[in-house]
Image 1 (cartoon, rainbow, N blue to C red):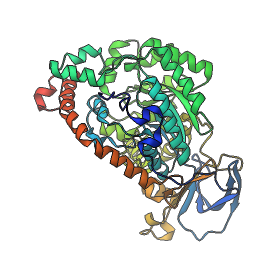
Image 2 (cartoon, helix red, strand yellow; image 1 turned 60 degrees about the horizontal axis):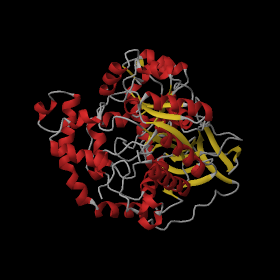
Image 3 (tube, rainbow, N blue to C red; image 1 turned 45 degrees about the vertical axis):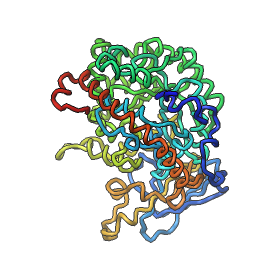
Image 4 (cartoon, rainbow, N blue to C red; image 1 turned 90 degrees about the vertical axis):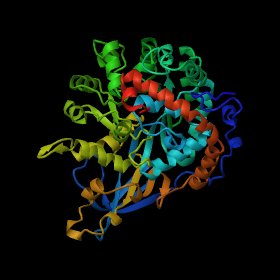
Length: 520
């Protein structure tokens, strides 16, 4: 049976029956609650992502109910830092990196169909591998935009993602994908298929197109996933994938449902220049204003990417309380451009930091991502840009808000016990003690390798740099075994994929195929 790219497996795959164990899930250690009355000690404390300075010498006592006390302690001027953890404000939980199945970096519009080459693998393993990398990077919360599936399979995969999140201890906002048009590009499907030779068009039709589920069924599965999986650590959000892929009817119904339920909405917006051109043609009054008229713009909404936002659009989004996820590495790797973060900052538009499963080095290192964002938007010459404190606030405060947890980013008695301990000593070995400014070291040198302990809601999730709740090495080994077993079939799809990418390049940028002779 031909695999369904939206489903990610065929009907015989055990994951479609919800039998994740049958797909070979490795044994793992039990993942119990955090120790009662535990404590963390550090040489330095950043009590809030908005704090102006570090405080020396601290012991934080906590349990599952929250932070119990902050006690001062003597310090010898070491280099351990306790701070609020990060949130990954936009991701797709790609435990299998796209390069592993031939989806190498390319313009977004050509890269996206390449992700359909992902072979059928256990969704628990995929989510667990991604979440392990995240927590080792100091990420306590993530916005998980699941890939499009038919509704019944989506429910089963949501359950697998929920189990992975629970085993590892990360807090997840699960975004249920919703779409009802334009499966192949920013046009009718038949328009895209006419760009291909008949045999290729038929092969793409068979592999990539499936019937679109009725809107009632798509929206109903949001409630089903919530009823089955939702908890303090696992929230569900509406996920209209983007305006290009959603009719006004779908967007209007999502706006009404979110207003009635209070549930958050998460969607892509203006990610590339081709999306901007399409939007300007389709909505001459302005795409952001159109979304506002439909009631989508509110503090419940997060929009991702936004590389093509204009200053007036930043102001409107800010006025409505919307959060924007900035995905710097992803936008660079997929040639989408650089988001206008300075305009957002000047407009008072809240922005967060997302990895989009495409970190610069494919390692889900949020500390490096923060640094890249800060350097790109920190200013030119003596003209300052976005301050480093605003970038840290984006990662520690606005990101958790996008994940459904407002008020994060603070370590204080009574606050939720979300704690990140970094050991920055390896980054200070060339610095004489009077010149060793730990705050500057954090912003200029810290990486995921410096994460020592991560506590989420009082539970120790990472200890001494290793994930506590699962056997990460066993998960990765089983995932690789499943990929190797299907490598031949994956490779057979790639020649067709390259021809399809070349046709898409011609559609979006006429003449590009003649200039290069290859796909992007």
